[in-house]
Image (cartoon, rainbow, N blue to C red):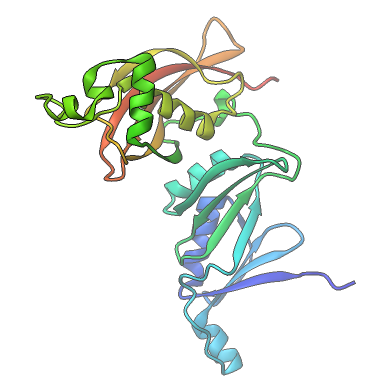
Length: 277
């Protein structure tokens, strides 16, 4: 039977790319031929990086630029997609698609590596994202989700039901308001949309997302047409002294618009179970 032995990407700097995959995705080095070729351990199939000059010297052929090729992807199966995605972005990977649960029973996300190659992170088929316990969280860890786009009609519909003030329900009255100068979403609407994205990012926290209070700020209004996304940064992780089965994590949840301006900043303390022994 023919067996797929290796996948090789030809890149400008094999060492830099291999080091990035080690930091970002936790791969270990299996073989190195100086700076010309580095093979990474990925199970039955090796992922290799060859310096373009090495390929040309050995074959006499010229290979094109590795940048911007969307017709191929490298798929890496990981036990926890959200955690692996956050780690990779912390090492400089560019987000293409935040982690999402698919109906066939798999969590996936997409990133681009330092050379622009498309990388898919995926959970095993039939296994959604593994639960995140307190031990899986650490200060500086970053999770992302979004975007969601908000329309004027959605702003007015929400406000009619839950915050019926003219600057949320009437564009004409909102335009005359001395502070808003135009239709603005209720802060509670922004909070609700934020919560939807937070569930998408860390909804697999063991025990769910359970808050124990926090500080909520709205630095600027959310407007019709805004494209919102969230960044969740872990600030503090503390095991409980009195309840050994749990602890708490303080996170900063920043909701950003398309201009990367904060429209909401929420800093809650969450109750998070510890991993069962």
